[in-house]
Image (cartoon, rainbow, N blue to C red; front, top):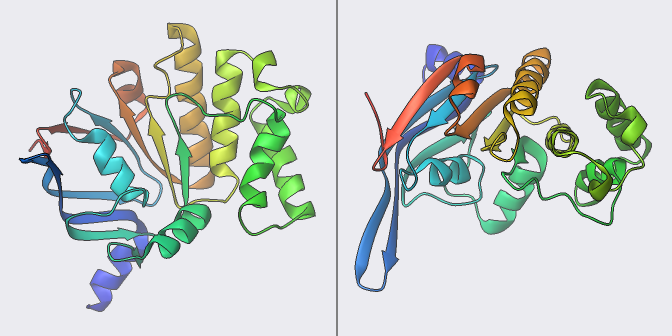
Amino acid sequence: MTLVESIDTARNALEMRGITKIYTVADDVVVALDHVDLTVASDEIVALVGPSGSGKTTLCSIAGGLLSPTDGSVVVAGKEISDYSGRQLTEFRRDSVGFVFQTVNLIPFLTARENLLVVDEIGRRLGRVARDRADQLLEELGLADRAANLPAQLSGGQKQRVAIGRALMNDPSLVLFDEPTSALDSNLGDQVVHLIRNEMKARGTAAIIVTHDDRITHYADRTVHIEDGRIAK
């Protein structure tokens, strides 16, 4: 690798090269991703748009280490993860990536603050440092007065903000959002996307947002279209 290539890689949160993902279902071979190339800069927000079954979720799952590619190279924050073992991928997800799922997936019997602290409990166990970070994130997200509330006591928008805070607890290089506005009305959806952009930009954190929502593309730095497992040129 040349010095120029090394510098360029350091500036990117994500580099995917020739990513192919093939599933075998019964006797059928399904090509979910077909030689996909995608680069996301260290502070870039990318909206990933495409119809159902186009490969959006598979692409994000590979970028986040939830799936391994059949072929190709994945580099996240300078780390080549394509050939990581299951244990290495678990550590990578814990330390380097944040996830915000469509269904939010908050733990119903934990408070908003405790839902953030779960990240530390299964991770580095930083104790007071983690508690201070959780309190800071809740304050920044406008949830300081909701820290002791259970998910059932929060609105849809507040739950999304807790999920965003949880995704930021490990100070990730890349955050992956799966349809973050799908369960929200237009007003709340706009507020959440505005919040996502502000939080990512304030931290210089990269994000990929999987969406069908045209509102999100206005807040993204770039929109990438995917169809039939290929990035549209």
